[in-house]
Length: 420
Image (cartoon, rainbow, N blue to C red):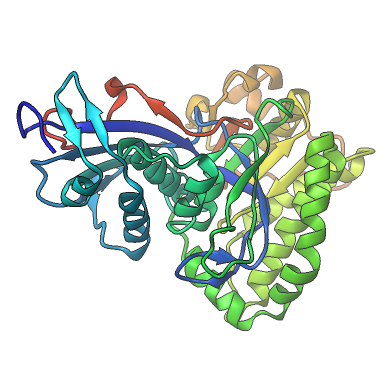
């Protein structure tokens, strides 16, 4: 290990998307290795709108491993970080930067300390899969820094040990996490079913109902469900294997009706398992239920489903529209039923791909107030409006997998290795 000066800092910055499961992962058969009791399938979301950016740095001048999340220093001593670090360091390869005179032998990596800075551009621990994007980015960036030779599927097995759903964020498009059968977890990996261009008609609208941290973490919720729910065993053995085959077929054929039916049914069954847990777990709230009612009424009034909805372990609704025209009609309905407070800036109420507001025909709050009631609302029932119940909406689409960013986008100072 060496260079012209022992004060060098070597850095890599990466960006990784989050993902939303349309066939849910809930329950582990091995807590330490994070091995699931069923397969799951997800859609990767466009990292332009939802992603984690992570800079990892190594230097002989660092005296300990350190990490900063969203600007605050956090401990790296947790078992999940340590599992990933141990796996990554054991696979590190020789590295040489002739230009800077830096040479690191495989054995030297164990002696070097790391600095890691990570930033989520969306709420952490609020049911938007922040841990998935975060741990996937942690593993992907460190694999680049430590010069690993493993492919994305092999890296997914490492990311899985940090956060189960993180393994699915190592690919874009549509991704399957295979539960595997081996006790050591070597076959519990993620594979890409189709890339983001395969079904690029889809538009995704997320209603952020609460950006607060949830009361019951996914980890403890899963443990309680596995111990106490009768439904979870039936779901894992009888229901999910059939749904996974059907969902793969729906994605391959771009069959939106089947896709929507399966996604909604699986989300509802996942939350039924949470209710079947003792004590029961309530991830959704009244606003979540109102959103389901709004989508279901519209879907039933049409000849075929227009929108799929799915909820992870939180109250936020992820709605997938069959195309952009349908997404505009969806957002129109959502703004009608869930208008912002009158002093809200519309630009901060609808974020991500804001161009969809033009399709809706809404430019300001006056336009929102003048939106007509959706036709599926019966004339004799006055429409219910829930002002302020949704914090904001994110408009996005299926997106690409992880990428390496330029040093100019680094979160750490290239000279000190400390946060900028």
